[in-house]
Image 1: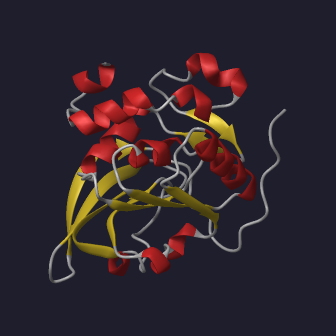
Image 2 (image 1 turned 60 degrees about the vertical axis):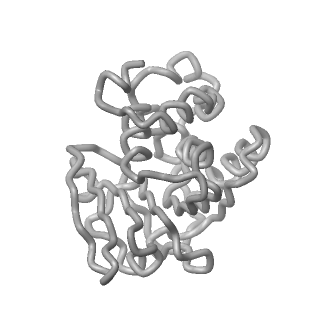
Amino acid sequence: MQIVARGVGDPAVLAALRAVPRHEFVPEESRGQAYEDYPLPIGSGQTISQPYIVALMTEALALAPGSRVLELGTGSGYQAAVLAAIADSVWSIEYFPTLAKEARERLARLGYGNVTTRVGDGWEGWPEHAPYDAIMITFAAPEIPPRLPAQLKPGGRLCLPLGEPHGHQALMLYTKREDGTLVATGLGPVRFVPVQRGKPGREPPRQP
């Protein structure tokens, strides 16, 4: 597996990537490319991340079998499925209603009953189910959303692409200390779709 050659070694993460059928999470016309190591469009101007980045971000969270995870940016549901293959519970928020509906139906059909999804502005997090052992953000953010640190357990980890939304970002990992402060670790340059803010509902037209 090329992901191993690039430094991902967590057995649980590698097992999750082998178990989750990535081709089920991409449009039918892209299924022949589903396992290539690059992102693919999924509609609404969004993408499914390349397998290496999915593996890298998942490994960075250091999930245990009983972990509770918040994901901001459901997309097709693929990253949520990988998280759910390791963690106990995953809560995932998607800004675009069409993607959220498709992801919810897809995850249910494939048996990922430990994933709960909703439509919303992920910037606010999901405080009703906090605290979380880990939080993953799958859109480019210019800063850590200010309400998220309080939703993370002491010792918990937060991973996000930090930087200007329409350029390159730095993939960052933050670990929360007992006193509530965050310790940062850089994981390398990345490029993600930009954050969406405000009331969900309006979507860009889908390409024919």
